[in-house]
Amino acid sequence: MKENWKNKVVLITGGSSGFGRMIAEGFARRGARIVLAALEKDLLEQATEEMRGAGSEVLPVLANITKQEDVDRIFASVMDHYGQLDVLVNAAGRTHRGRIEQIPPEDFQALFDLNVLGTIRCTQAAIPHLLKTKGHVVNIGSLASKSASRWTGAYPVSKFAVAAFSQQLRLELGPEGIHVLLVCPGPIKRDNPRLYKLPEGESLPQEALQPGAGVKVGKIDPVQLTEKIIRACEKRKPELVVPWKARILFAIAQLFPSLGDWIVRKKTS
Image 1 (cartoon, rainbow, N blue to C red):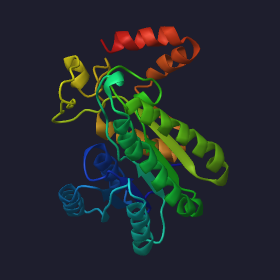
Image 2: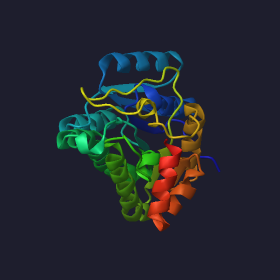
Image 3: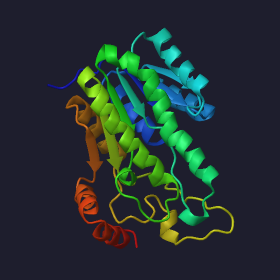
Image 4: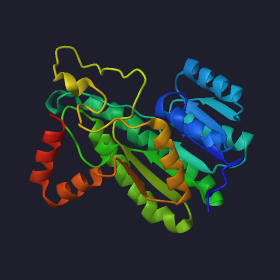
């Protein structure tokens, strides 16, 4: 039986733009009350205005999830306004490019703070509320959560950590009623795909600057992916990998690492 999302409270970090906003709109279409937590004021105001104009109930919270005081403020706002939380979607994050031997440790630290520690901060703050509602944690990972690839800098390191964190949450909190979903998508289709910038003086193959760093998979429709995420929540699935055939690579790489590396090179050359 489908879950009734009407009047459920769904908090999306990074929800003012990109795929985070797509997820917000997907839950809003089902009648959920949406909390958008985002860093950029202009985008947050625009998203709030447009979603409210479409009839959605939206609470915007301007916040930086790399700061604990901002995370505390997000959840205080949710509780003050709604008194409950049913879904946390950890969508805030960014990708990276560069040759692994040329990336300063500080760059790893900065990306880790957003992609991993931001997810951890928000999830820890959400757990007491989600225990009450038997709610959902949705962590937006990547194919890079399961298999690294060339030229993606500190990104796979951070996304592997998100995968491990998600599994630990499932093992510890699943028996207490919290559903945890790790979403591992390939590159998502964008109307205006951007080229990623590199540090001055560094060069990479042109395909490495594209979304997905040159991986040979079709771009994923964000609306369809959003629908799959919501259905996965309704079925309380542990993981969603898109495209599903990537699971074959993940299994091969675990059993035969050299063969897995060869396949990754072939699929990103």
